[in-house]
Length: 347
Image 1 (cartoon, rainbow, N blue to C red):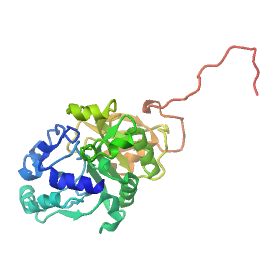
Image 2 (cartoon, rainbow, N blue to C red; image 1 turned 90 degrees about the horizontal axis):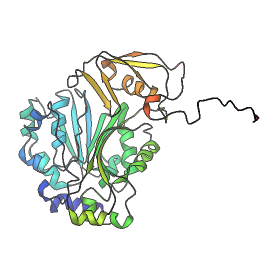
Image 3 (cartoon, helix red, strand yellow; image 1 turned 90 degrees about the vertical axis):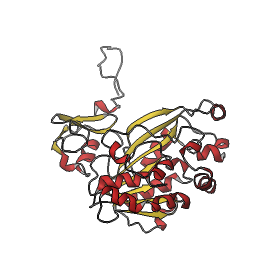
Image 4 (cartoon, one colour; image 1 turned 30 degrees about the vertical axis):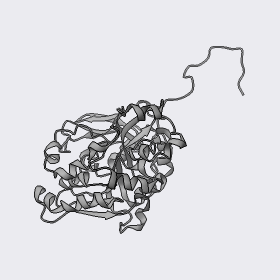
């Protein structure tokens, strides 16, 4: 299947218009990224097959790895965001796509005014990152855009990402997920696989896999339903629903499996340039500037022990535990009222 995917993206597709579904369909970018996207080379844009946007906040000076970088659209966008002091490395298995990316390296260096090229490209498989010249613990952020679903060994990819991230670094990526496990007969179809559908993970399997690989508290940033827009393919897929979703996984050892309350809070300073009025950590955590915002222990650590540390003031510690944090979707499973019956007995 990996050879089929390589052929699909290297020889069968000449541009996004050749795709047979809308699974690999980009979303409307935020205003602060539109001027940068407008400066990317037309050929790089035309060979883009992503399903989301992988440009998290506060990237200045960061070292980033892009898995399945393709023609380099996200690499070059991120190179503008990390600036002269940062760098971006792209990895892809498709030589034809990398030829496009490398062809326009000087063009983008001039567009964004870097005195030297702050990007590099490696040809290789994302399941074999340990065979590339990439140092463990050397990346602040790893991104991927609609590529993990194409992998034939997703556990190996996610485990390697954790190995390559610095402590407190994050895996920020968009991908396609299903609402149930895709039947094996569909996973063997090269077109459905190449269209980012039949290789998609069932969302709950993804969460469990991430935890098994050391990312204890996956955070969903945003999601949207995919409509496919191809009646013949829709008929073959039946009732399976697919979603594009963006997750962020923080490389923090010791995160708890649930959101535990230690009486902590944070105050966002409003100092991230693209988010002056409030900071969006994930779909459940929008932190308004200047507001004392109660958070669970995991969220506190995601901010305090990552590149976001200086953008917040921190209240509290881990000295007193108050139980499950009520606003994180998990609550005490037992009845909270005392029975007035006197007919029973205790043991």
